Image (tube, rainbow, N blue to C red; front, side, top):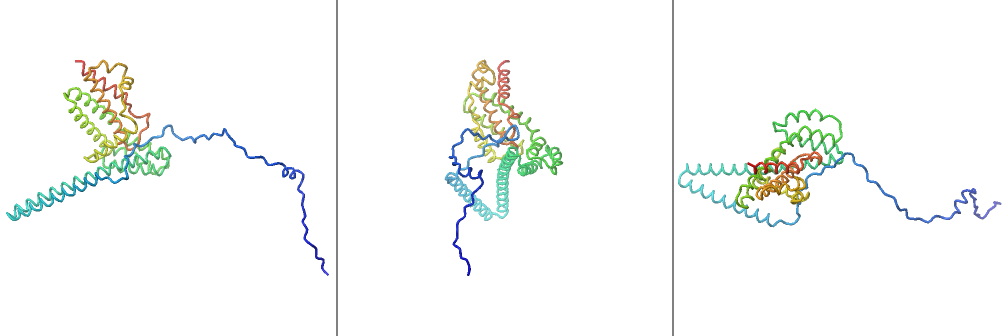
Length: 343
């Protein structure tokens, strides 16, 4: 006969220490204040920033649609007119017809060449923007992949230039080396870009002095505006050509928009007389005549536009400590104005 026992509960008492910990009352959660999180230190003394890109609106651009439609209508009208002209000359004489057709073909080929040059110039300007973004990212984050992309595109940008062959040859010997992204960008800047900064300074200073002198001798304000606009556009084209661009008509206007956008972001056009006197020297503009003072101000604004155009056209963003300052250019301009004033 089996012994069937009912189930029972057994309580195992823990040791004394564990029992006291279990019996201790739980501490209520409390808010901990006064804790500060320090930001991570970034290697490098300076973080460079690429020029501000143009804002692209997502709205429908009716003005662009209207311009495109009108251009298409004018093109169709011109094609129809040329076709009728060629047919009429063929009816008069086969020789005149073939001559007219050859002239029309030559005109069409020239138009295609101009359109291709404009497209190529715009693509080259966008390529410089892409190099600037990759180079700034490589300097800021020490990204090796972005640095290799930027250096490779920069080598392709300067591949066809005779004045860059020595720098390309010296830079090529470091292609297989393992190095940080920031150091690779610095090497590319040293061998390919930095050598052009002195010439950029000369272009900006020369354009500023010409604006100062021309606005001093021109009789009307309308001519001042035309001269200043023409010289500023010419300066932008020279800077773009110096740093690897191929400026054409459309790319020059796009470059002007980029420069104005960069000036709007950096506040570069906010030049007051107090700032000018602070940089150049107190009361210096007051010792000049009114006309020379106006020319000096126009030259200073041209210098500021030139510095912004250099920042936009330079493939690798330059550190602030290495950039030309507006103060040095302003002193050069006012000194030139005083020399022109005194016989």
